[in-house]
Structure formats: C-alpha cells, structure tokens
Image (tube, rainbow, N blue to C red; front, side):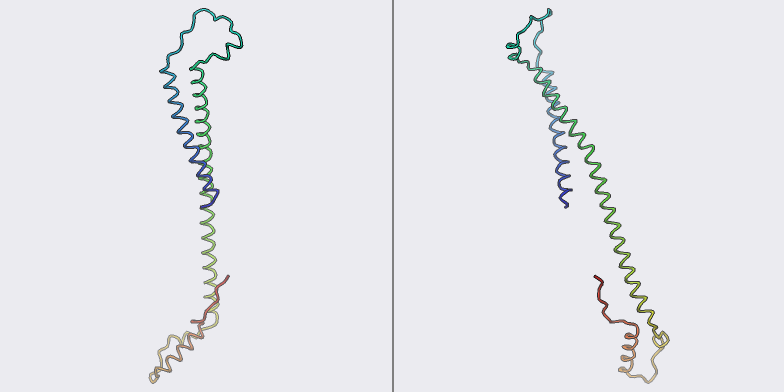
Length: 166
C-alpha cells in the first residue's frame, strides 16, 4: 500500500473516531445539563459584585455550556474533514485505478504489436506453401520426410529463438 494511502486511511479513522467521541460527549453533556437543576435567580437586580468575588464564583451550567460548545465544534470540524477528505480520497483512488488500467491496456497493445511484427517478419520471408501442403512422394522414407519437414520449419523460421525485447 502506498504510504500516502495509509496516511489518508489513518486520518479518516481519526476524524471518524473524533466525530463519534465528540457527538457522544455532546449528547451526554446535553443530558447532564437537562438533569442538573439551575440555581434560583433573584427577581431583583443583583448587587454590584467586585472583581475579586466575580472570579471566584463557579457556575456548573456555564462550564457545561462551554464543554458542550467545544464538543459541538469538534464534532462539526471532524464531520467536515470527513465530508471533504473521503470524496477526495475516492476520486484520487479512482483516477489511479483508471491510470493503471490505461497503462495495462497500452502494455497489452504493445505486446500485440510486437507479436504482429514478428509474425509479419516470419511470413514475409516467402514460404513455399505448395511444398508445405503437398503430400510426400510415394516412395519417400521416414528420414526424407523429417529432413523435408526440417527444411520447411527452417524456411518458416519456426523453432528459432527470438530474443525478448527489453
């Protein structure tokens, strides 16, 4: 596997798991927010608070809201990354597959052309077809037939080794 493909798959898994974890966290925080009762607020305007006491007051609802917003942002960012990254990876994989198919077809065509050129070179030497298809004379011996067959083969170029193209 190509290192870029492995990295793409790793990122895809990371974003998918990030989306799942952030969504579960966000739903859980919504549930906690709904279950935790809010502190009663006075009907009158609150008294002015100094800066020293304002920093020390802790409200659980604000912390839950902040955590929920962070989980929502993480879920949306990972979903966006998945939505953009996966189609781009598929398009690239399809383009590479098509390029490989075209290269395989070109290689096959080159082999066909090379074989056709060899065949044309063999057949253009002028084989004596009449002698090749005529039956042997009636008084011919086995040795004479084999010699004549070897002559036909030599004439046709059969049995010669052709060096492979590199």
